[in-house]
Image (cartoon, rainbow, N blue to C red; front, side):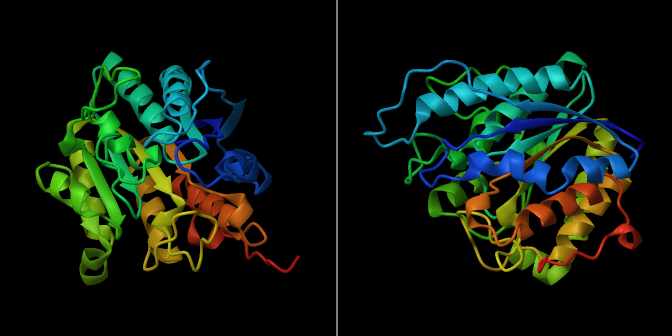
Length: 309
């Protein structure tokens, strides 16, 4: 990847689930040295600050869905910011819970359509987030962004998706918590999906290589959405949806190094960091390190960090 103009966009979305804390994520990334890490790799960095949702009617939260009005407002705001930012560089969306990706991906998809290129999405997550408001049992909308940006129904009250991402352009890597409704829905799609058993048996590089080759052959743009719970909670505890058995530090770095080597990534989400649940900032620092790998940091460039300071 050549030197980039990295555009940091804070998305303190905390409406996608009932457990609070993700709104502190954007500032935690800044505090953990994200800007300095990217600049050390000779990228330029523009920090757009934190986005706000468009005006919305306050949610009563007495129904089945949690905060649908606020989440819809975030989706509209982020889609506009994302589409515009793509003209100026490589946007990095600092979350915030994963509901933010409904807006970030929709906006990036609008940009891709405007320049006549297909959009691909790499979903690094323990969960598929392929629910709709009609199918989610929890009522938490951070489990619905893939359903939204691929054009599933049931999102009344949300901005219309004008450029849905084709299912065959989505690759999910690291799955290990998929409920029955999602499993049945996914089996009827062409979404590429790779769970941790497959990764345990065959490694994480092979499916990623195949997907990146597909993106390159199609001349596509690549949006990467990295959820903290892609990682094993033993190394990344600052997330409200801990699922044991996730990616190791080395597996995650390998993914990010391969993304850099491919030169294909054109936008990035860093989501679900809840600093309230962290241990001396270790998760925030690890996510910053992974981001640095995706932007070109090599093995011998990595600092040794003491968490006792």
